Image (cartoon, rainbow, N blue to C red; front, side):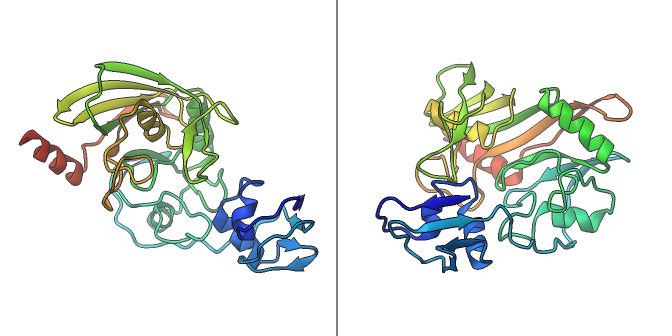
Length: 297
């Protein structure tokens, strides 16, 4: 891909290029350092400020990927058989490696736990059928072989896997039930965020049911009809009742526990036995303890 700079800019090349490519800024930095992004045929540093008439070349290649290694890690395994593992993920644990982050993820722990993981999604996401955000807690499915992975992925794309979350919203949600039907795409002002938008977006539907009301807070159960990045976090913020303690979409400061969003249950048809499978996990300790403080108010 070639880009000709047509206007003066005062921003570094890595930030400048985020307007033109889908790559994250950290991946752009790695490409620059590897010489996969050049200016007028020459290597530059990440601090380079593009000039008018510069010709920037961006290779389709990615930098050489670091090796993903197995790491000893405590795993909360809810269920396991020859085809699937059901994991209860804690807050703060990234699901799979990415640019600049190749250790300390759930995948690293899974690789130490078992050699039986699907490789449908390549070397950096073995077994991962779907993911949940770093600070979102709760249940998720891991596939132990490719056949199971492909069947589960197909079921997920057809909305045949039912996933419910429990969230604590900031504010007193006005309705007992609601459906948020609003398309989600990349936030044009902040590439780390998603947003409700009509531009380059996909349909997104979240069903909301109030479980309990507190002074200044509402505990809700959210059912996903679609599975977009940050879907519940974006939709709740869009309604004006963001998830409590959400560092990206919330109101005010947040602590290291992150958003009070918990993947509480999952229902699916077993890829081999065709049995209906249902799993549910309780709220994490930090979540329950905070709810106890709200009871006292």
